Length: 299
Image 1 (tube, one colour):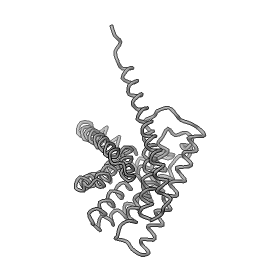
Image 2 (cartoon, helix red, strand yellow; image 1 turned 180 degrees about the vertical axis):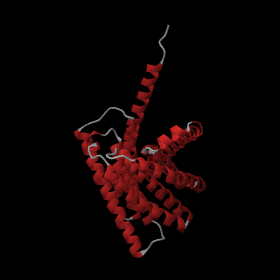
Image 3 (cartoon, one colour; image 1 turned 120 degrees about the vertical axis):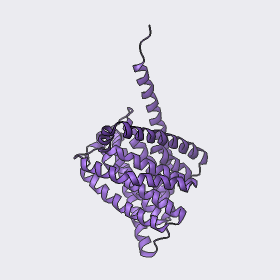
Image 4 (cartoon, one colour; image 1 turned 135 degrees about the horizontal axis):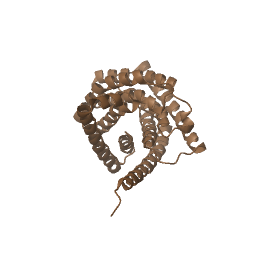
């Protein structure tokens, strides 16, 4: 998810080589994780079903949609459509399973119910623009509206104390607003809606982006007040919202014809790239340390 959205942002800011490299990496990681997903489903059905009851399971949908969106922007519409079909097929079952088991108070991962749903909206709207399919635009509008409602559901369960003590996934609270703004911006850019409908979508896009930026600021200040510098796997859940906020700003600027989000989005994109590099370095160190710990002692 994090790598895919960084690729989208680099594409939007005119860095094709870096964007292509990030796309290749995101595609490779998706293929590995998809294979592991399928193998576990076939060999450990009980374990798969238990994992599917937890919010992180919805990253399968969100990551597929992010990759599909980048492939669509690359011009590979058939591949993007296949990924949309895969994500849409898995999404209802996972969403219902997660909602049935979602506890209160919940960590930031609870907002993945919104992220996955809005991911479908983003990919459907992107394909609708590329292929001129009005029915996909209407489907994207329905998914976007449902995603906003699911954000309210997650917010009602979210443990606000996670803002000051979370290990990274608290940032999904902002990331969910960012992907909602991105979905709304794609709908705003659609020729399907004109007049008052277009104006309403444009206003909604700007409101969602402003709320996202406010949440981003609160979370950033909390990190400064109480630094959490050690590596944690959940830090990838920080990188994704950083990148998604940048992309939402860039897309809103274009769709809503507003200048200021573009400059802000460009700056935030490089913040996200720096976050990706730091998190990747932390993951590499943690992996090497784990391998060294497991290595049997010599003779």
